[in-house]
Length: 130
Image 1: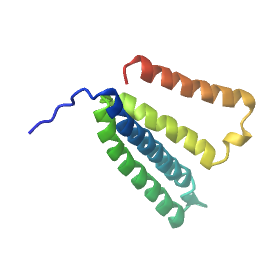
Image 2: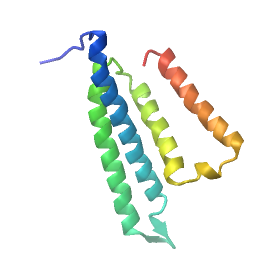
Image 3: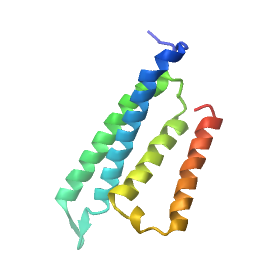
């Protein structure tokens, strides 16, 4: 049995949009947590198990949230994998910078460039119908 996505009335977009945004943010933050701890799994050429476990938990949580977010993204008509991925990666990149606290150490120029990249991703999403 196949299902098709039917156009929703304007008021019906609020719940799926809120869910998609919230779950995508959670997915990106989970992945960011996974990446931050993945960068710490090798110390003095030895595996650091605590960092590995935290990294795995972050990635596991992130992908689980992404899978659930996809349900709501599909309801909104966002079916292109590149758009879905772009949004999650943008949140992940910001999350890594925030969680690692490196963003606070960046020069103003780098902060402006990072914000420009995020704005560019937003532009692509809007212009490609994502």
